Length: 575
Image (cartoon, rainbow, N blue to C red; front, side):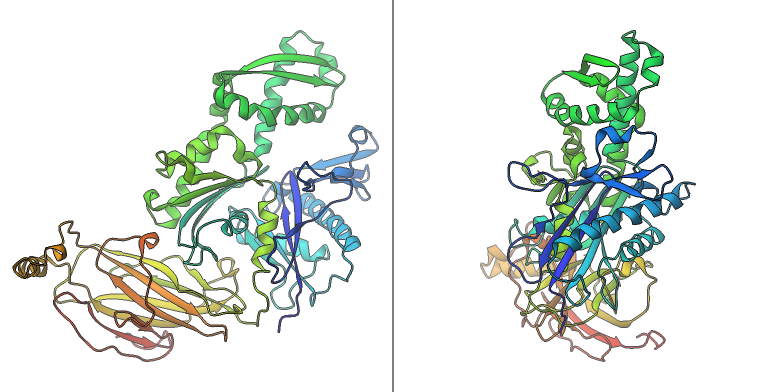
């Protein structure tokens, strides 16, 4: 039995960080951690922790972090103010080594605060930790983040260490409980302070356990870029107002930075519905400024930096990586503070072909805390779990040289109850064959949920040969004639399409076992339109990884005939 009782979910953001703590098996959402020095909003939700450090001038003693940093202390020559260090983690930048040290210091300070408020010791038997990472990060950056969290003292699983999760996947988890109990293909855009992440996920019939189809990101685009863009713009405006340049040059830019961030919160709402916005700024030590920023000027500023195009490219890359058409996306969720900009929704609506159904693009009501909540929920979803590796599968349809992206079809641990049938679309076969069978190859293997950061290891294989010919033109015409002669006009297929869609069905049992079946549908359909599946239907093909099994031949006129052969070792000769 897994003795973990609580999960600590961490959103280590470029500009803001947050933590959520959840009891395993709890039906209520996670509790957001209240940092020292933080306030609560009108809804009683704790503020985030700014991802900043105030060190002494020797760079070896922590004076304050986050909300505890006093504005007046930033300008003190005996202090060193550090921010924006997450962006440099694991990069080739010469400051990357310092960034790693600052990140570890910051995380260690967060750990001290968590430890001071939790009544019990943070041992691995009572706690687990899950932290999110930007989708664009590579394997070495994710490994570095894991090691920094562990070195900071956060509890880790004895076998797997600290759990990690892509930020958009974590954000999605905090939303799934609000949606209908049906499969969906969802685009999640997480636009935070330092990074932009996009992922395409497919949920099962239970509406939970997202399977990642595609992922993309821009590790150098976030809300901080808007800050810098506006700082440069208004600094020039101040100069054009004939203020003394020497006085201006002597003033710390982070004083203007603070004023810009306060204005930025209102800028998007006003430019969404108006052609201009009158900005009032106070730069301490310089003066006051009132300036009308037009929507045209703001759009030109973004165009110069290529911001719109970079967002659009990221969305397109995520969809392309998933291998699906934009028309197959049924919903989009926008989260992260920068997703509140008016143009982000415009881009997603267009790229996902959802312009006629704008209500399908949802802006999160809690964009700043979704990631932390999702991290906590991802590891606390069951009342009791028994140790079991997750199960992954990859496949290739007839004629494909490349394997499809692996999918995590069974998560680590096991459900406390028998699960609903989970459906994974394998793709479409665009035409019939009268005599030659089609083939689908599968490869199953065990691994934790971080498999995509590890080398592929071969596992148990399966091959299914089947005949898909019920839509063949040579069969359709006589079938329609026969149905017309018998007066069965409702059986005449007027909207004929010679297309078959393949689905992998999975059902997990509370004992830890799972059964897999293959279904071939001879009409073009999406998973969201599938009727209820009868698990005992004779039309389903059993798939048994690692065991030899055969299916007899049957049917001809309107049925699919098939046989399946399964073998264990990859070196074994394939049928």
